[in-house]
Image 1: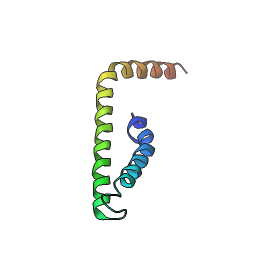
Image 2: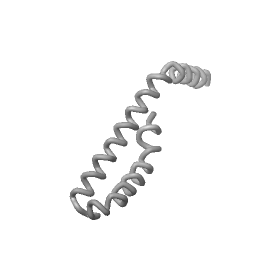
Image 3: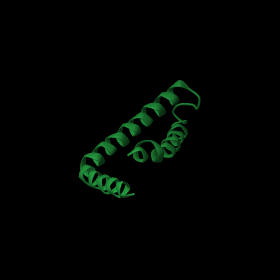
Image 4: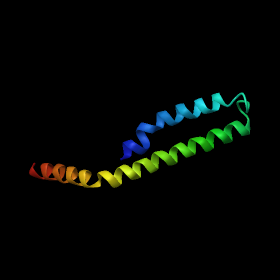
Length: 79
């Protein structure tokens, strides 16, 4: 789940944050507090949605993940 929360979405969050800031520059000039604030709030909403999605995935996949971890643990113990 570390991949789902931190590693994979990191690049996309930076990219989408840049795109949001760039797209709203007609309403709020780049470098202004308003541009920064809107970009930050929308990025935090995206982070919240990613974490929510991860929570749902963990809830739905918990039995599968548990079984997989048991198989891996048994395999390692054989060595």
